[in-house]
Length: 248
Length: 248
Image 1 (cartoon, helix red, strand yellow):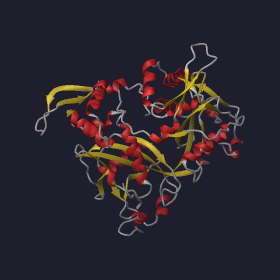
Image 2 (tube, chains in turn brown, purple):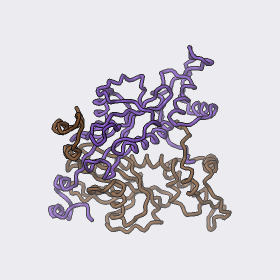
Image 3 (cartoon, one colour):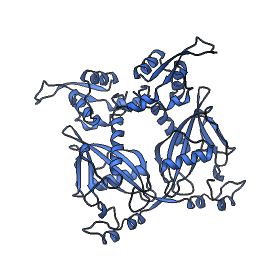
């Protein structure tokens, strides 16, 4: 099979396609949506923001925050628009994860969706509940969802677990000044595992992005821990050169 | 803006949408393509497989192996089909990297493309050059390409550098039995950096996937190195639980 229909190559010079508009017009077209998987961190638990489905055959089921992509809208812009329209929040970290394209994923016909992932601090952001059916759910409390949204959430959860180990997006969930205990709690909640305290601290100090504020926690029921800041400026400047081979 | 046009909600029960086909029919449709970024490893150099553009305004420029996505074809299937049609190769590791959606990326109008990435051993696979204009290019020798394909190649190159440190896909490029020197050459060529010999070996042994064959290289101009196999079965069984926080 060749890329171009014969009718178009006839116009070409030396078999080249000259009418690119006709070429694109000959391609099949697909309805395209963006779905946002918004993770939040609250009381040491990872949560995900869902909305009740507005489709009758999915009545009572939860779905992701999604919408179709507009003409001439790029996918990043679509994700930010959808997020803003649904939650009232803007200026949020959103990253493309992957496309989901199984032909049977939407009961209304072929729809391909691009999943975007975000991680927000539930307390930092005022969630203007533009829609009353918007709710935070514990990541492990979800089972049945509309469409293939359960699979999308699971894929994005695995993506997030990996991503927070490569990129300090998780640090946005902590206060500006935080203790090492708070930092470890965050990582343990998202990774869903217990981390060795000594190794965790050693690892973080070896990356050399923690700024010692010389201040201590107060009003805590345990021995006050030292408070640190994360050096985002230094992280941005260094933009890592990957060298840590690790697939064990 | 609401997700559904008003005309559709009228049919619904309690505002729910009952006609899902009409809903999907109301979405804008976009021509969708898949582009394959096929990296190969040859003579300690990373290469990428390109084809001459068949579009007259891009005459003489190189493009990726791509085609439109067919009706009812999922994206993985489309990527494998395109790869097979263009190269004659099948049974290849192909992974979705991301969508590229800038409205101006195709001169013929709006086309969104999903990039897939592959890594093949140029010598293992018989590249049936179904098209004479198919060529391997040194990754660092490419500059100008048709469409946004230069950006796509760069994005996939960064993706590959990261991916080979998380997943043994690179090992497929080595002979069944390989020396640690060959292994390090492979990683250095793809990462584009020099790795410390001791640390590299220590890291690989600590992952515990290397099987000592008790055999040695022969016909080499240096001291024969021991030959190893990679334990793919063990890797598959363990399917890593990520715990290596690392964003330095």
